[in-house]
Amino acid sequence: MASHKNAPAREEESDGALGEKSGLWGALAGLIVAALIAVPLSSAFAFATHPRTQQLFGGRLSEATQGGYIAFWWIVTILLVALPFLVGFGVAKLSTRTLTIIGAIIVLFIIAILILGQMFVF
Image: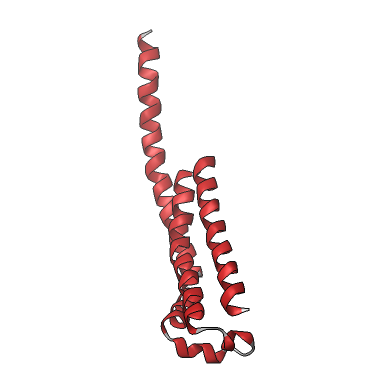
């Protein structure tokens, strides 16, 4: 029975080592995603902070209200900023519950972007 009592302690030690490595993998995944979205993030931020860029787009986007245009690009910017953190956290945890929560957050952001896009842009 003495070896049975020591078994959980060994499992906890190995989980701790894996937890540290999974955090590094999460950080690496977040860094890679951040590098991949750097240009779209920069563009979305520029469109959100310079309302005169609305004239660059032809058609209905140039006719949208200025507040709707700015709100749309700020939501896109927030989603792009959050994406590396969400991916890194998801890779670090790799549990079904965590991935479900992250997926739900991303879906809510996409729905918000679509609603604002339909209301103010298109």
